[in-house]
Image (cartoon, rainbow, N blue to C red; front, top):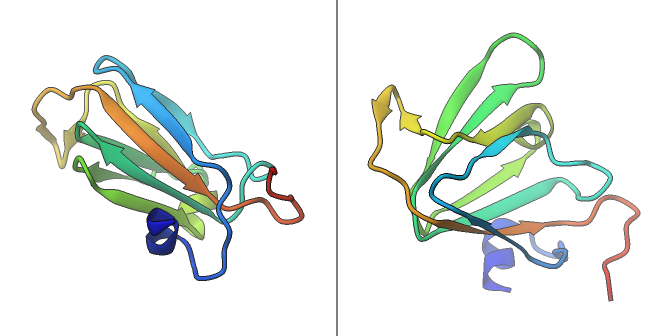
Amino acid sequence: SRLAALALPSGVEPMPIHVLDLKPEGWISRHVDHTEYSGAYIAGVSLLSHAVMLLESEQGDGSAFELLLPRRSLYVLHGEARYKWGHSVPLEPSFEGQPLPPKGRRISILLRDPAPGEALPV
């Protein structure tokens, strides 16, 4: 409930928490989370190791930027970041053109609000 209070607007009831366990040699392919399964907010806490999230425009114009996720950091995707930018976690991250120390195992705790019209699981 503390995470929901930090990441979601007051009164927004979160869906059940999703935990992602990523090995040091793991990566996450570019995607936009399905709008039929979750609502306007996606929040994550990075644990154990740093990561870089690469956000790339879905408009096809080549726009992209990097988001450094230090361990124990919180990020929230909402609005355009939620719907108009694909996100990924590269295998070999760099930030602003500089290589980072080798990454370790990363656990992410992910929180979403339900899609409009979706009931929360009981």
